[in-house]
Image (cartoon, rainbow, N blue to C red; front, side, top):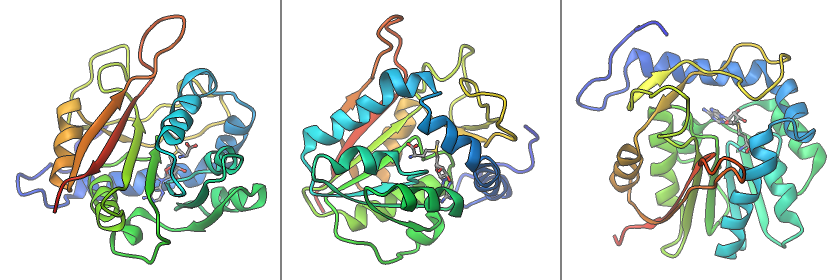
Length: 241
Ligand SMILES: C[S@@+](CC[C@H](N)C(=O)[O-])C[C@H]1O[C@@H](n2cnc3c(N)ncnc32)[C@H](O)[C@@H]1O
């Protein structure tokens, strides 16, 4: 990836952040159709085998009544939770994904960007917010976490499932840096992949703490054959205010 700007020590959004966050959104817009097909046909092995069940189990342990699915994609999680009597409100920036979610049902869905959400758009009352592989950027991720802290009640929970910082790639990855995207594990129908911002475990915990959360639990869903974590799930509650 070309260096087109640099992180600044004041945490001000830079040109790199801006352009990468835009590239994330346009990549998802371009790849909505193959993504819907891949999710619904169970074509992504790690999801089918490990990470879907892992996030559903983490949600069920918390016994929520009302959930916000942030970056909901085509809405599989709402459909999964519908049978457990959990109300789901999902939002995503890609209209084609939201239309697919609405058509399949299981929850209420709307088209909204993280930036609009972070700026304080009106949301239903919730007791659990979920980001399932949907926090890909830098400044956009911070904005989502900050707004979620303001939205949740004192007993509320934020669940984030994401790439495990230590096992995201066969090669070591530089933490706190933008990485080129890849559709590894998916078929050739996909086009340009979204860049993503890599964080260390410490980086994730620091980000959560900065934005008002404390870690309650961390899960590392493992591949049953290899014993290697397929992801990490952060379960965070609000710091006392
Ligand atoms: C890997 S997909 C995960 C989708 C869904 N959570 C799932 O588990 O299938 C990442 C999702 O994040 C959404 N997304 C990325 N950047 C976004 C933004 N700035 N605002 C809203 N949604 C965004 C994408 O459109 C995409 O649906």
